Image 1 (cartoon, helix red, strand yellow):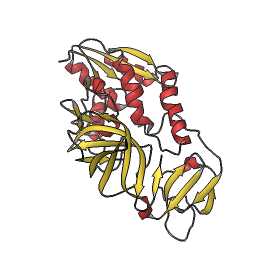
Image 2 (cartoon, one colour):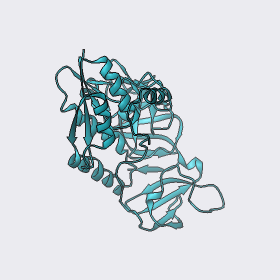
Image 3 (cartoon, one colour):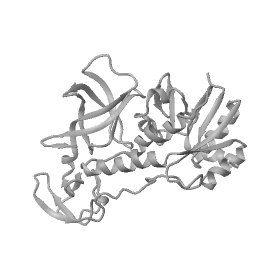
Amino acid sequence: MFSRALVALSGGVDSSYALTLSIERYSRVRAGYVDTAGDGIPPEVERTANAAGVDLVRVDAVERFRREIVLWSEKMLAKGLTPNPCARCNAKIKLLALHEILKSSETLVTGHYARRDGELVQRGRDADKDQSYFLSLVSSEILRDCTFPLGGMLKKNIRREAIRLNIPFRKKESMDLCFRLTAMEGKPGRVIDIFGRQVGSHGGIKNYTVGQRKGLGAYGKRMYVVAVNSLDGTVTIGKREDLLSTGCSVIEMNWFRKPSSFPSEALVQTRYRRKAVPAILDFKDGSLHIEFNRPEEAVAPGQVCAVYLNTSVIGGGTISSTERLDWKIDG
């Protein structure tokens, strides 16, 4: 279907190896770097493109990134939500920006650990590196032009092969956010229990996230962060069972294959590192309602909920509220 390729190049081993594979598979290949910080093309990206002998284009996404990711994340925090900037960035910035410059007969090649299942995205073979969750918000229009050559491979093998072939790449893995979230940083606030009673204080909510246990201080028993509210600066703590949710509501759904009827059974994944669990999907009050077969831990408003049938993503959206065993957190 595609004879040419535009490779999303970041300088890491995954995109660099994807570029090497693309050169073997397509008649003409070029690379694209999406600049979100305004610093230009990094030296490691230029070295990779030069070594491969391909043209490299810089796509300016600085203002779009500031508006769609940085300011959006700050607004989410201000509402007491836990944003997922990386999933949104795939949909609103990086894949979108490159797709906009895609030429006729070109496929957009990325180093994501995911596979194609027709017009759906399937989990990658490497379970520890699977990134199908992060693609659940990307539009079908973009995904049908994408190719994921690493989806059937293992990360350890890719790194070993890249070293053997002497492919230039950034040795340090990129794991953290590429920008700084500053909302409510350093501002003291209250630590409360699930009944709203103050049990302590903190020096800034930036160090707390739902499900966290370390760094809470001594309360005579093991406690966890069960909610973080950027609006009033409170951190709610409770016992592990207080982290359990019976269900959640999801808004802004991006469907690849919407169920033909509701209620419907599916698998849902509420965080990147969490296992997908069985659930019942239904529509209530204008949003998708999800009822877990068993209570699920650390479900946070603002996070992405990806919906799967077996190993294929059929949609994704943003968690707007969670239903706890005996209390509710609204976003």
